[in-house]
Length: 133
Length: 110
Image (tube, rainbow over all chains, first blue to last red):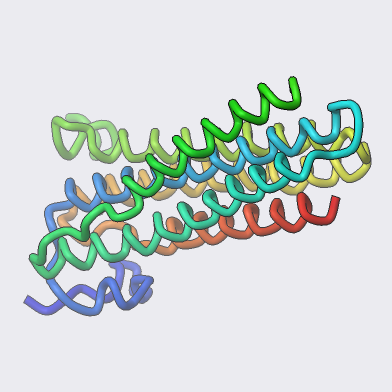
């Protein structure tokens, strides 16, 4: 069966690299893939909110802004950017795999995120004990 | 006879669950936006209001597009035609990346 590259309304389905080959998968898998993408997106938004929260301490704490806090904030914001970009590329790779019957891509980012968040948590604790805020 | 809109395509309610996941994501945008607004308000009330005026309607737009996606998905599942494409996920992920980059620039400059 030829891949369905256009929607019923005649527009081309985007991104084209996902839809140009393979057959329509079970719609339940497509919807599950979409929910996984959204869960990663929420994770990335939570990371960014954490980064902004840490940076906000620099604005309210007495004295000069602490560069360690800024570094932690940038790290969390950068992690959020990586997570949201990867969320979409992984969605696309998974959708392609579902369409072509290939194995799903491995969750490479999940363990990295786990270790990185542990490190961030330890760093935040150290910061709290050293500066008191 | 029940209409196509109220008759679910599968008993797992996949389309509904996916739309609720979209709603949660839009709400995360709202919460994140409010955190940033509170943060900016420390230095400039005007900037905070401008930021809120740009981001909060975006969350409403995402929610509206997600419900349109739900209706189309429901219609196409019953008609056995392909589901809506990856344009909305791509656009929302790009928005999140943009928000993060703006955040990094703001933190480094302030």
